[in-house]
Amino acid sequence: TYTTPYINFMAALPQLQQVPNNSSKNCLVIGLGAGQLPMLLKRVGLNVEVVEIDPLVAEMAKKHFDFTIQDNHIHFTDGRQFLTRSSDNYEYIFIDAFNADQIAWHLLSKEALEITRQRMTTQGLLVINLTSIASSQDVASLQCTLQSIFPYVRGFSDGQYPELASFVFVASTSPIHL
Image (cartoon, rainbow, N blue to C red; front, side, top):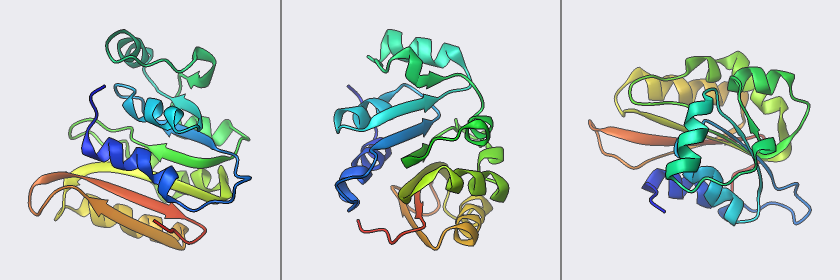
């Protein structure tokens, strides 16, 4: 199965983070894409749920990319609405709901990230992929917003200034040990 470096990095984070043995292993992925990230997370033993706004995306992932998460673990709705309505808590929440130059900013606002934090376990990790240019306000704005909500934030990038790159932010209410 084809994956990208940032998908591989994001999928490795649950294996790198030191969490208690009794952790829930519940994982939420907002934004399906081709389905690579949820499938990699499932392979390492996580209980994966997916939120995808467009049912056609899931259909294409199943048809062309070997996506096999059961239908009862796929929620066709907006990610922010799902988090607002849900009462479940997750050890890991991944937000990768962007394409090309379109960023779903309503998922990254202070209010949305506060809702996301409420859906996380005490040791939980929030992982966000943002594709942008290093010098853009997008990257600095997201980092600042995350730091206003989470005491622990780390950022990683696969690119070099001034090129378009994937920026992966990891945030938690507990120390991040990677």
